Image (tube, rainbow, N blue to C red; front, side, top):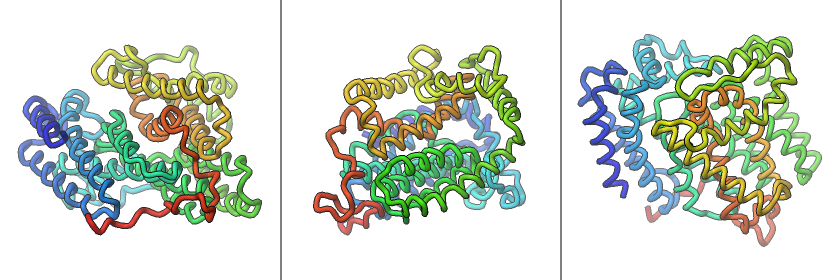
Length: 438
């Protein structure tokens, strides 16, 4: 199917919107730029053959990459032609850098993406080719999320990989030249580590947690705080690990958490609680623009006012826009996706109740969504279009939890099967070896 759909999407995007998109990025030779993107796409397609994954996974990845190219080099062009995205700023300013490495700074997302563009210019100056490379990073992130899900379920269900790879928001926003693919890769590695840490109780998987948080925080420094908090809470509350294991974990995790929190405070010049209120109100209000904007009456004047808003903000960040709230093609598609995921949660919770969250890996997923939603709700509520884009950071967790509730509740999360038990499946904490049959 992808062999038919992708060329059609690419041809339609190139012929109908290519010229207008090229103007946004000051591309004067569209044909050459686009051809470089196609060549890069084919080279990266061939590289999938060498991924150390089973043959069934490789076939799925071939399909998902071909379809992703239809979005990256086709569907995205009308969006770029109309909005330009942040990608135009990243590309144009990045290409003008003389020393990209000097611009790199931990937590400075905009600078770092510009620097990455400058570094990629040593390989190719084509915007289309660079965008394809970023999209490939997004595909890698999707596959790592799938590996994390496989650890949690103890089964290799390839349908989950297709579900993740075909989720519209994840497919689109992890294919852009921008922060999203890099952040998503970091969160995916973090989730892979969390799965091994909680499900397999392997402290060695903490390395993946740290690496993932560092990558995500390299672009958005506050993500370190947001994603470290649920893991610390879950690991302390789960009650199944030994006291020594918990102590070791806390001795390693808490200093890193505090360092990230310090960097977050310094980045936003926060010294007092009132500074936090003022800065939150400023950031929240800055997103109240565009066709999907909506105002928070009165703004935020105190910590209690922020806390009172969090449930509304979290719901908005996780499940809005709902159908017909944003009346443009992208808004309508976002509404359909959101109502589907919301439906998965409603049906699942009505069927099983909150008792299922006694399982530590599910508790971690719930706490992660609540913490992330509470933090991002302040900006998401003011701009529903941006809310849909922000949510890509946790879209895989949200989708996987919803699918588990609805379709896979009969599977026993492997957190209850101790390593070495005759009923425990083979350890999947490490990526599988390459299939000799190709």
